[in-house]
Image (cartoon, rainbow, N blue to C red; front, top):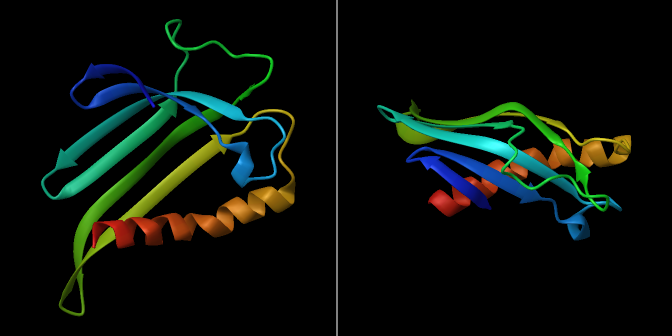
Length: 124
């Protein structure tokens, strides 16, 4: 959720993970800065964890994660004469201790393309 709008394209975001959809016993939370930019026909959304006194403080029931520099880049392109949108995703996350099981990390990595497919379905 947007915690605080800094300006038109910059906002502080507070996110708490939903543990019902994964194998985590404790939810993770993230305090991030989100920046969106449109350059010609490109759309760029970049994120990174921040430590800001105004944002919620860690609680004993939630593990504070860290979102390292991450971004989504959407770029128009043409393949075989057909207009497409090229999506570049860079996500770097430290989920905090206790460490996540490698099986869960593998599952998350395998589901990343599904997020992009859902985005494509949503946009068409």
